[in-house]
Image (cartoon, rainbow, N blue to C red; front, side, top):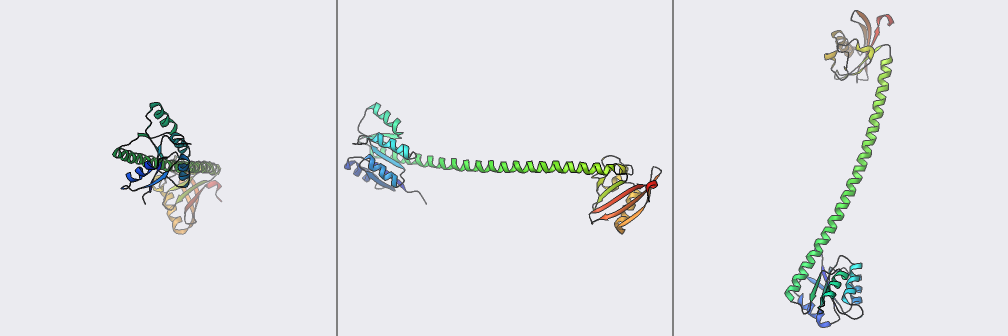
Length: 269
């Protein structure tokens, strides 16, 4: 729904107010009138007005004083002064004090005044749209900043969790490496997921075997033993590596993979 356009005309001369009403009869404007500055303020306090046209010379409160008060209380309104008073310094003072958009001399040209009113309203709605877009942008920026803060917090938590998991894995690996028997873990895709130092001697490649496929790094006798464990679920036997025999025990762990334990022959029960 389009916003209703209201124009407040303030002048202590009734014939001027009547002339302004007649001027806008063919326009879709709601014309409000007041015979004094105080009456104009009372009207503005009750309903929103986009544009105010005020006479310069009025008793009690002149046009500049009135529009200055309008600017303080309703700064978004467009303010126009009509006056037959042609003193240049007065015009400059009126524009500066009342933050006036236009100073139009009396008698005015109807066509020029209507063009001025149209331009004034266009300025008002452009300014209003700019304020709305600025507020919307501010809200979006605040939402983005809030999202960034949440993301930073999440990343910090993830980083702390990763550091904790890394530390835990390092401790876990240290404990495995300290064990006197070799331990090898293989998942259901035949990828090596666990290996301690005692177990490395049984492999073809003694560095970086975790993450490799068993077929690329393990000798054939261990591969055959793994196949047997898959079939039987639990198995044991002996293998030889570099002239040394080891007992190997294998078991399926909760259908997640296989654990192999290598025990030197002299330590085997």
